[in-house]
Image 1 (spheres, one colour):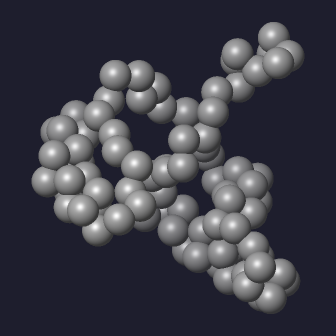
Image 2 (cartoon, helix red, strand yellow):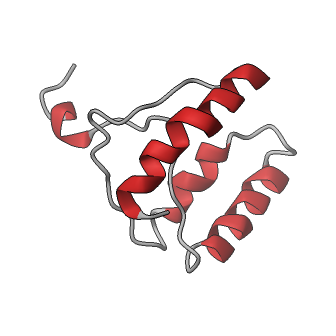
Length: 91
């Protein structure tokens, strides 16, 4: 791996979009979906939104998390993981 990648960080599969950026995100999601005939990933819109909305990284070191593949995972995330994260910023 190039040394510069240590400074770039990693997308961990979720993000927070504020109210002001939501219309742009929806528009870009629709755009990439139409352009690709539904064969796109939501990340394709994220790549575009960084050009028109401010973006900032968040250090998630030590935060609880879980992968959500099944309904049981979602229930655990809702009951155990999300409350711990929400308390951090009063979400």
